[in-house]
Structure formats: structure tokens, C-alpha cells
Length: 370
Image (cartoon, rainbow, N blue to C red; front, side, top):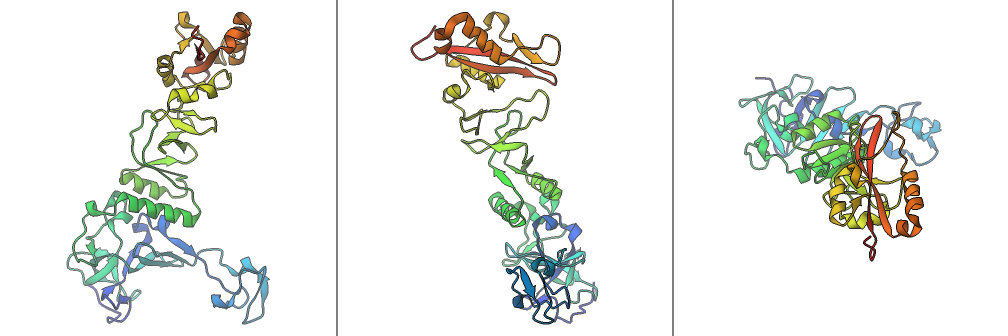
């Protein structure tokens, strides 16, 4: 039990009678990744801070109080003076170096004991329990790792308890995360699935997680796959995530490239659409999983008698096969007519740290089946 030091007159929403909730910022997993920073604008000379009297769009700003003139950036505090969140029915503030968040409006409430005289009339959410002194605004389950708040959560409108499984749906969650990232200037991308071989086809979000580690853990607890934005891209057809940077020495792409250099995943690609882009080019090769698809449309291995793995390039002795010289030798051996009447596609069979093995597939072009 606590004492209402505000006597019912402070830190209270007079429309609903619900008290402001107070909670340490460190208790709320998503606060730092969701709040917006606001900076104090004031005269660096006299401290005058009526922002409506300043014209910060000009190069030089004049203080109406003391006539000080300075660069516009000199008038804005270098550190945030307040962190706020004003979305989804919330009105929350964390002032200056205060470790606590004040929740002045929320779709949710819980019962908790009154705060000390430092926040007269508010309730402290660390002291939430069924017999708490008063109702106070609180964060919903979605603000916490594991998707569960450390206190009972009730709906303000209905008064009914909100179970963790009744949290906001994923589409609303994604909109909230992306909107926040745009306000912060961060790049976050959403994928309806993952089309990378060896991965489960989960919904995913890519970002530079060094900027907000807690957000990645929280999204993972919701069933999303957190991906690094510099390692993944989007399939040009289905929009699912495909890895574009290796995660091991033996990694191979689960996509092929269009002539616009956009990836198309193994689930979407119709191999006939990519023959012209890869054919006859010693600097392009399809990944190993395309071999069976090439055979299905009439390609065969040029080194059939050698098990189709005769070529090897790497750092060790005799690993010096060069795709460009291979095509030149075929041209010299069979003549230009034979060479020009066929499609030639290199396929990577296997890659490792210091070498890779590859094959050459070919078929006669339309009207020439030799």
C-alpha cells in the first residue's frame, strides 16, 4: 500500500480517473527502440526557450530576449531533453536523465501501488498487483521480451483482462516497427517469407541490428527471423528474402540473376528465362541446384565422360582452369559454327575455402539439336 501524495489532483487522467503509470525505462524492452527524441531549442546566451519565437530555418538566428545572434545549430541541444512515444493510443514521456517513463495515456491499465512523493498521485508499475492502490496506465504485452508484461494487463475500454496470446496482430506490429524506423532514419525491411535453401520459410525483418539489439530479440520472440540487411535482398518475383552474402566457404546462392541484376529465387525461377543472360559468358555461372533443371530442358554436360566435375580453380597446384580459356578451346576445336549454334552455361558444383569445382553445360539452340 502507498499514499496518494497528489490527493487526487496530480498525475491523473481526469477524464477516466486512471493514474499515470511510472516504470523504469530499463524494464521496457522496446522503449529505446520505439521512442522519439526531442531536443530543447533555446538561446545559448540567455536560455530563452519559447520555440515559437525562433526562426530556425534561417542561417542566423536572433534571440528576441537578449538580441544574441548565432548559427541555427547552436540553438539546439546536443543531447535529447525528452524521449516520447505518441502512437497507437499511447502518450509516454521520459524526461532528461530521469530513468523512469511516465505513461499518461494508454489503451491498457493495471492496478498498482502509489509512487513516492517524487511522482505524487502516480502508480509505480513495479508494484503492480491485484489489490493495488489504484488503476494506472501501462504498456501492453508487446513492449516486453517474450510477449508478456510483468503485470496483469486490462483493456481500458472493456475492463477485460488481456492475455498475452491476444496481443496485436503481426501486420499491426510490422507497421509500428517500420513507421518507427522511418522516423529514426533506420532501414528496416519486411519479408513475407525466406526463400533461402536450408532456412525455414518464416516471416522476416532485415536491419542493422547493431542499432537496436533488443528489437531483434523481441521480434524473434514473436516468431520473426531477424536478418542482417547487408546480407539479404528480396526476390524480384515473390518478394521473399534471399541471402546475397555468403555465410560459409561452401555457400551457393539460392537464386539466379536477371539481366537487370535482380535476384530471382529458386522457388520462382523458370530456367528458360535465364539462358540468354548466362549463356556463353565466362564470368557468370549458375549454382549447383540448377543442374537438374538444365538437364530437363535439354542441356547436357560437356565433360560427360569425366563425371561432369573436370574443371577446378583455386590456390593449389593444377587448380588453374579458366572459364574464358575453356570457351576459347571449344571454339578452336569445333569451329565457330558449332560454338555459335549452342548455348554454353557454366555451373558451380562445389566451393570451398581455396578452390571451386565447376562444369560446363551445353545444348543446341532452337533448330539445332546436335
